[in-house]
Length: 452
Image (tube, rainbow, N blue to C red; front, top):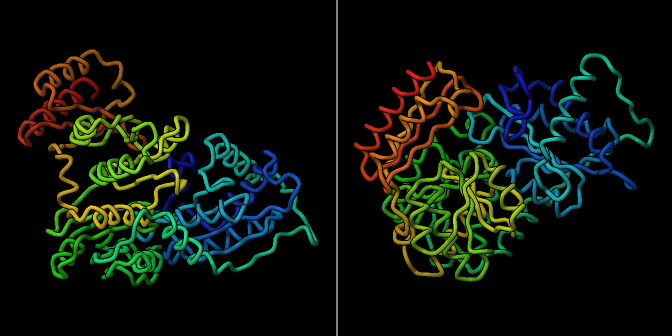
């Protein structure tokens, strides 16, 4: 698998890349690294462990629980819950560690392990590196120091997690959702019970699709990566809006009453203005990645909201928010972080806040999302090139300058080396799709000739 930890934990094909042995070993290593860092000082350590409904999550959960308990960590098993719920419970229960088993929007054969530090925050990069190094050291033969007798961890089922999390979501809503009819697509995933319960308790009339997980159907033709069913259901039921989650419900996309998609950039725009109106948008700033649509930038500029851009990945959005005291950030894909109420992207919370804005204003989601106009965006992947020379090629730099001259103030160019593949991503935005496509193809040819 190369380096085990990516930008969002450890992922791979379950029982091929991500085995029970790996899950157990990483869990033991995490316990030892956190103990060395002083996290467990002066008390008996506790971990919260949750998962999405994938079939492989059953044996991987057993391996993680076994690893933690064998290292002397007491375990609270919360069962099938969204990633943000596990993060929330890790914080509110005062646990030293949280573990979520999920591969998010990936297909069912995949799975993943994500660790949370005390408070429900993602582990720092240096701790992940240390866990990986310790795991490798012991995988090759160095014996673990193991507790015995009363020193081993105890395992309990914590079945209050759903109610505690839903109560938290309802408690932070600025207003109720009475009078709204909402279709929820749960992607046959971790929010299949949580999200309908939360929206119903908030006062909405709820219609659900994709809410019958069987361990094999997660993300299958539904959820935030497949909006076709949601679009059709919203129109069929005459709903005010639709909300789609992914497998672990850390993201949210929406559909307006006409069946048109409302993406992460538009959701951020709506929430930014709502939060500013009630004085919750600290420093009147929102954080987004370099892949957010130029239309979002122009909309925020027009509304007097400052925009900070980061590298692609919700962890970089979160780092910028925490370092600078911002309250709202996210990605076009629907990872939205409302830092006053969550330590990670939370699809259910995002959907509730979006619906609350519709209910509070009496305006349709279509009208609210119209605050920004998405500019046409073309993305071309150029494979088999030397991606390391993107920033140093004079020939390519000249091509970028020419592309920017053609686009003027109403367009944007982004060249980005892939983090996992030998390719360069060419992204072009323009006032019309034909111009965007033409300039993107020119730049893709320039990447091939200068880096091939």
